[in-house]
Image 1 (cartoon, protein in one colour):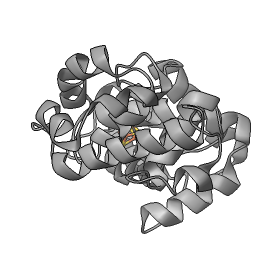
Image 2 (tube, rainbow, N blue to C red):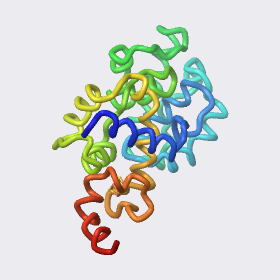
Image 3 (cartoon, helix red, strand yellow):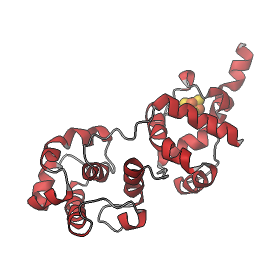
Image 4 (tube, protein in one colour):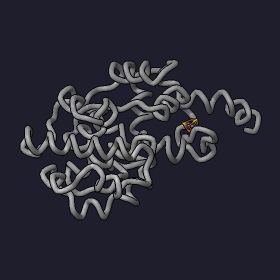
Length: 218
Ligand code: SF4
């Protein structure tokens, strides 16, 4: 696919899903980090439902000192893996408060040394907080990129590497969240909403499955 077509497709997706950065609800950087840790294997909607009472009491990493792991677990007992996630929140909050002045460092490698912060959490938090050029390629972004025909890859890891080469940093900063929403609401895994999708003309999946039908109907 030509570079100009790739850019046009991504610009269309950005137009469709705006410039928002996350569907998670938070007020401070530490609250964002907590929400992203909680969102592993859980929907953003579920995370947003359970965080408000905790966020009334915990705004900054130093606030975590007032809570034991068991107390944190009580707030989060309705998300998957809440025991581990609560421990990660306690330990990472403590490290941030004691060693980083309560500030989340803008350094992916350093972030990934914190308990519960893997590459996904690190990339999402840094791209939202500091506009760093990270696209976290999950199964949804992997699916979209292959369906449209921007990449031909077998795994999210391979797609991740391709995206790194194919797009400018400026575009990577803007494309992550719109792509997530596009996969969540339009190019859905089981039944993509192709009939109303503005990318039909440039999409390989659409052309393969519906292109001929359109020509014969015209
Ligand atoms: S036309 Fe269908 S498959 Fe192609 S991007 Fe749109 S929703 Fe996804």
